[in-house]
Image 1 (cartoon, rainbow, N blue to C red):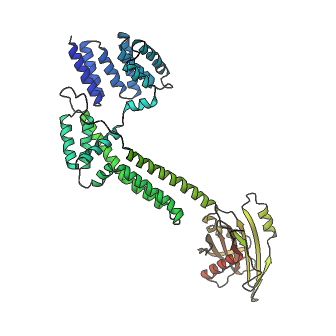
Image 2 (cartoon, one colour; image 1 turned 60 degrees about the horizontal axis):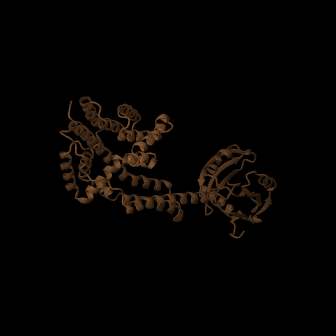
Image 3 (cartoon, one colour; image 1 turned 45 degrees about the vertical axis):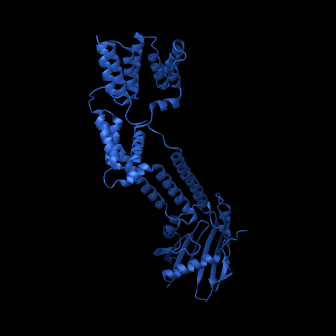
Length: 474
């Protein structure tokens, strides 16, 4: 039988291994001592806590088995009761209802045995979700980033790397030191000064990146529209340095963790890690990160609202068809079309007309124009550029000569023109369809010898003559 000093030494060694993150080795040390010295409550508690630190369901089940075995031998041991109460209170009430229900019972037993003990206070705090998160401590990634930030702030990259290598060599079992050594070695390589700067100025970079995105989102509505892919490309470019740093840190964590977990302990690990406790972000850094996120979110919401308002907005027009146009006289043909617009269930068509112009020089010139005005904010270019398909199926149209996309002119929108042979008369004619967010229509006319430019010009002139922008007070 070993002495009590041997059991206490094994317990201290296993506890230090838990602090260093070497949980499997901690359990092995404690279980070896239990086999040699017999049941010991402190060693059983270490085994259970080493399982709890894994934060996995299987290990939580193993920890419960250890606690139940230990309390069967030492039913009134305060530390064992407190540890088991913590495990039960932190368990999922839906996933492990029986275990979770045992927590309050254990707390009552603790109050009977040690009403003012720190063990009771710690176990009671386990009922708080926030306390559970705090008890788990910061993530390995956060510890790594803050350790590297502190090292690079205190010394040059080369000096910080040298110091980290020295300290890691003195404690090869310490995972935190090994990760810091691997990270500084990677960051100290030539050409990685931008990544080192990003480590030191990460909150400032995030703020500037979010500010840039916010400015780009709003600039599309202030300076004039430009392709959304430009904003998306800038976002991707701004993320690339962060992605490169994240991959470098992840690789260093893996290398450092593997190196430390594979090292053999020559003796008891120190009770405290040689690195200082992890410091949270300063208030200034938190304000920068929060302000940047709030700014980007506000800009996104504002840009979304503005985009929606711009999308549903449409230009207003007034019908202004002259009685005579280019020497031709107007004939109104719009009764049937007006009735159709009035019965439109969508209510988007505000007015419509069809006019037929004839006469002029007596050479048989003729022009027909049909238009409607209203809220057509969901109109797309495809509705106009596919009009040749509509034209080819229109009665009276014979052979279609050609179609092309035309310049819509000062009113904007889209225009498509076509030349064809009228089936009944055999005349060569042209038709141009146009649409924007506030109007749509077509104009057709005789075009036996007109070029594309002439056809487009007459279509634009007709459109501008028949429709005028509505005054703001109308």
